Amino acid sequence: MRLMAVIVVDHPLAKHLLSNLRDKTTSTAAFRHMSRALSAMIILEATRSMGLEPWTVETPVQETTESQLSQGLAIVPVLRAGLGMMESALDLFPDVAVGYVGLERDETTAIARSYYTKLPDLRNRYTICVDPMLATGGSASQALSVCKSAGANPLVYACIIAAPEGIDKVEGDHPDVPIYAAAVDSHLNDHKYIVPGLGDFGDRLFGTA
Ligand code: PRP
Ligand code: URA
View 1 (cartoon, rainbow, N blue to C red):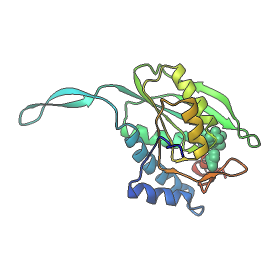
View 2: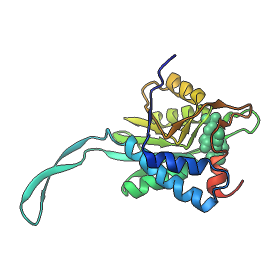
View 3: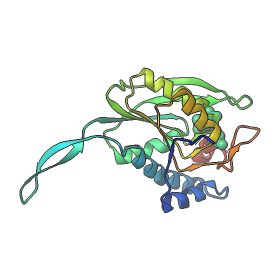
View 4: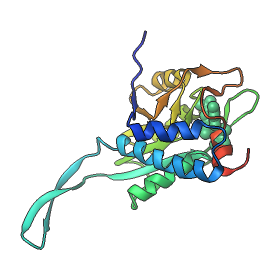
């Protein structure tokens, strides 16, 4: 069996929040609140390898050499469900640059169609592409290619639930991009939905089910 290079955030709180997101009786308000909290945990993990540089500050007691982030950050949500994860990045990194990639899966073929792209210059930015559901991996692979063409380096991908099929696709197309997730689920069903999953993330986040 091939070892999948996914970094799973396995903090007990992450598991608790994800179980609530999976629960079909969770209200839209609770879903929004919990997905934001869980996304913050995933984004913290996905930024763990950001570089630091020395920074001299003066405390009320004396001067000391501490640290500051040495590189700017960019967050690229895949519309529309990725917006839920973007909010957490804005909370944690208020100066983060934001780019958008609009992709929508065709309901019958599950192939993603691009309808919008607006990216800043991503050269020299630690870039996190976010989308909560990694299903077939078609959307993720397209979004990562777009980020690379804007110069993203390094580039990481963060989701809430990953399916093995999607992990294989991203690993095949973008072996240099690490994947962060709160869970790796079992498989995709005939409609290319993640099993057990949590249903349609965008519909649950935006109350459009
Ligand atoms: C969902 C999800 C991902 C995509 C994953 O978006 O947010 O973008 O499906 O599927 P894939 O791995 O098979 O490509 P959807 O197309 O439903 O659009 P939405 O976010 O606007 O609801
Ligand atoms: N998109 C979702 O929102 N959920 C899935 O299970 C698969 C794709």
